[in-house]
Amino acid sequence: MPTTTTAPADPTVGGHHPHGWRIVTALAITSTVGYGTLYYTYPVLLRPMAATLGASTTAVTAALTVSVLAGALMAIPVGRWLDHHGGRALMTTGSIAATALLVAWSQVQTIGQLYAVMIGIGITGAMVLYEPAFAVIIAWFTPDRRATALLAVTIVAGFASTIFMPLTGLLAAHLGWRGALLVLAVIHGLVTVPLHALTIRRPRSPAASGPADPTPPAHAQRRTLVKAAMRDARFWVLAATFIAQGAATSTMTVHLVGYLTSRGHPATFAATATGLLGVLSVTGRLVLTAARRHLRVTTIVAAVFATQAAAVLTMPLLADTRTGAVITIVGFGLGFGITSLATPALLADRYGTTAYATIAGRLAAPVTIAKATAPLAAAALLHTAGYTPLLAAVATCCALAAIGMTTRAKTPAPQPFTAQA
Image (tube, rainbow, N blue to C red; front, side):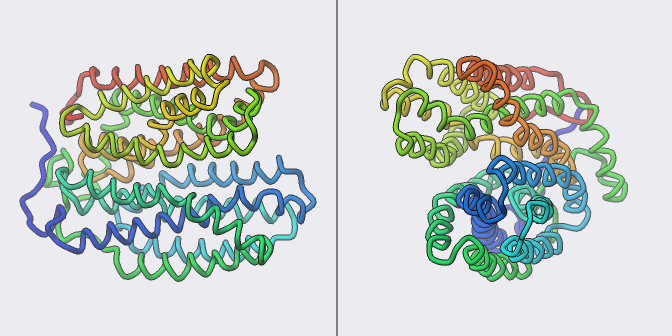
C-alpha cells in the first residue's frame, strides 16, 4: 500500500517554536537584499558598465545570462549539501563570498573580468537566495504553516526590485557605477552575513518525515527518495511544465517593453506597465495561498497558466490602447511568480522533506537554464519573424504548462508516493 507523508507532533516545530518565525524574518530580509544587490542592480548599471569597459550592451547583457546558467548548474550540489548539512554554513559562506564578489565587480576593467565575477555571483546566488531559503523553511514548518512561512518570504522579497533599482540608480548618479557597487557590497555584507550566521540552524526534529522507511540511515533514505523521484513520471511532467512556463515568463520580461513600444506606446509607459509584473507576482502568490484552502494546488496553477496564455493571445487585439495593454499584462502577470510557491508545495507534499533540497535542485537546474536561454531564442525568432509569432510561441508555452499541470494531477502515483496536490 502507498504511504502518505505525515507531520510529527513535536510542538517545537511547525511554527509553534518562535525561532522558526525568526528564521522566516531573517530570510525575508536576506532574500530581498540578495536579489536586490546581486541581480536587480544589473540592468540599472548595464549601460554605464558597457561604456566604461568599451563593450557592447549585448556582450554585457550576456554576462548576466552566463551568471544565471552558473547558478542553475550549482542548484544540484547545493540541494544535496542542504539535505546533508542544513543551510547555516552554506548560506553564511555564500553571503561572505557574494559580498566579496560585489567589491570585485566594482573593480573590473575588462569584459572577461566581468564574466568571471558574474559566474561567481551566479554560484553564490544559488547558495543564498530562494532555493536554499525554501529548503531551510520547509525543514522547520509543518504543512499547515509552511505555506504562510513561504508566502511571507516571497512577498517581502518580491519588492526587491522596487527598493534596489531606484536605490542603485540614485547611488550611480552620485557615486558612479563602481561607487554604487561598493555601497551595495557594504549593505549586503552587513545585513546578510550576520543574519545567516546567527539565525539559521536546523530544527531539533524534522518538520515532516519523508515517505521512506525511517529505519535506514538518513543518507540512505535520501538516496532512495531521490532515485524514486527520478523514476516518478510526475516529477518529469512537473519539470516540463515549469520549463515551458519559465521560458514564457522570462521571454515576456525581456521583450515586453519592445513589444509595447512597437504598438505605438511611449517608452516610459511601456517600462512602467512592464514594471507591473513585479507587483503582480506578489498578487499571484497571495491568490495561490488563499485559494489552496479550497482547491488543489495543481488546479489553481493550471488555471493561472491558462489565464496567461489567454492574455498573451489577446495582446495583438487589445495592446493598441493603454487600458488594453494593462489588462493583458495583469492577466499574464498573475502567473509571474506563482511557481516560486507552487514548487515547494508540490515537491514537499509528494516527496516529504527528507530529500527535499536535492529533488528541488534537480528540478531547478533545467528550469533555470530554460529561463536564461529562452529570451535569446526569442530574440532570434523576433529578428526573423516579428512579434506575432513570438507571442504565439509564448502563449503556446503557457498553454502547454496548463496542460502539463493538469496532466500531473491525473498521473498515477507509484509507490512509495501518494498524490496529495
